[in-house]
Length: 132
Image (tube, rainbow, N blue to C red; front, side):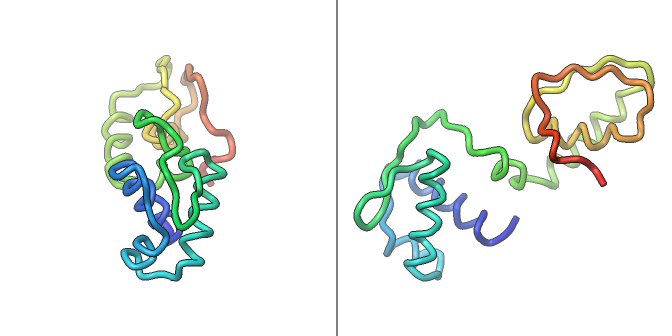
């Protein structure tokens, strides 16, 4: 996870807890410039996570909001890999399996790369995240 993603996750966490955040407080907490925080807030506003206000931001979405896939896929990456490694041990050639559309499911899909004869049912897997 890069520094920008870490900041955005921190900002999202703070706005979820408090409902409102201030640019000056976030800059001090994260030890970055206020301009950096303003850019982060603008990006998060474009994602629909918050609404910019003078000097800060307020929560734009309900508490049941799920962060964008791009952010979620970087959180708990080691745990997701461990889950996928354990799950793939139960898969055999010729199986039919259902995979959900979450970030842990995406990690499982990466672990299925070597299988030749599987039927996979999924509501959605992000096609641009292919294993190299």
